[in-house]
Image (cartoon, rainbow, N blue to C red; front, side, top):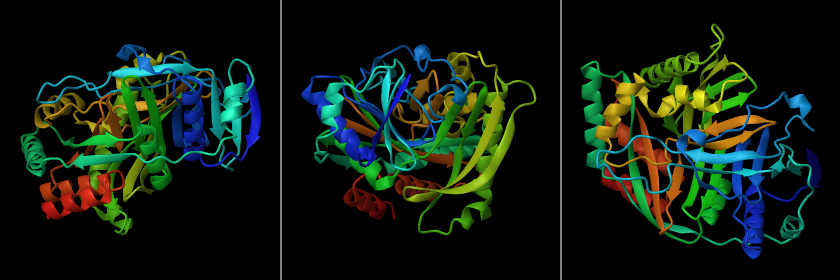
Amino acid sequence: MLTERLGDLGTADDVLRTVAAGTRLHGRPPPAALIGDWFGSTAVIAPSVAVTPVDAGDVFPDSPGEEPSTAPSADFVGGGWIGYLSYPDPGADGGPSRIPAAAGGRTDTVLRRDRTGCWFFESLSGEGLPEWLSTALKVPPIHDHCAIAWTRPDADEHRTGVLSCLAAIGAGEVYQACVCTQFTGTVTGSPLDFFADAAARTSPARGAYLAGDWGAIASLSPELFLRRTGGRVSSSPIKGTLPRHAEPEQLLASAKDVAENIMIVDLVRNDLGRVAVTGTVTVPELLAVYPAPGVWHLVSTVSAQVPADLPASALLAATFPPASVTGTPKTRARQLLAQWERHRRGVYCGTIGLASPVAGCELNVAIRTVEFDAFSGAIFGVGGGITADSNPDAEWQECLHKAAPIIDDVQYSRARKTAS
């Protein structure tokens, strides 16, 4: 393993643009990036990685990570397997996946930005900073613009889904479920420029970017699905949302939001309990209010100890798809959601992240996520949890508030006026 201090190279979005320009110049695969709160750092960029389709059972295959003291520094990442896994269920229309259901690739090097703004080059193999990358990092970033012409979802279709969910809750089939809808768009420009601009503007806690011949993914997620180091696993589900102009205390005063969050915490406890060492599932944080782009969120954290040799496939089999984007009971909620939602979610509500043999594994919940295909098409999913106290009009407005920081302001304004 090797680490090299590079100093202040600039913001994460600028370094990503610079590295991407270097890969294009040298005919290399594009970079992948994690921006926000990842591995104790503010950015982890794989300078060049071939992200190719894989079987859904082969994602995040690396070991769960050694104790941090064995690495050159406590926050050393070095590299690993970076990729995504899509939400597995179809939509009511039975349509196929628009991009591969899962994809990823291995990188032996990363650029990591710590919390002071200092960049480091890290290598699992011990090889030094390659010449092409050293040269690329000296070139000022080029800020190109990416535009997406969005078409808003069908408000009546979403309302029908919410009403169907309320009926199922009344019949005792489910207690809560996350009903989603989609914006569709036509893209002019590079998805990487879209992500870089949006990440700079919104400062996502769990942002991620991946690209390949199949298309690209730009995730501006605020939510942690799983963090694993050795045998320690934690998950921080988000349930409960208010627009940022509201007082955050209103979330804790909302019986609907509190009940929804606690139901999902119980579901996460159950999921982790399927593979955890008996008696180790705890809730170290319950009902905390955190800011996110355009909104306030109610967040809790569930932790557990699992056998250190538990494979990633077993952990994902117990917990995926994430509890916060499904419902309770989970199996029945998924069955019903596949009937209520017209289109397949795709990467939206799946997971994106990195498994490092040294630093462990961190995965987001792929919400606030734009899926780009190879033909200038884009999909942006948005949704919210429905409980017995939900109001269909309020749920539609929540979708628009969540979408507002991602879609263009003109289109958002039109959608908001149409819905009012």
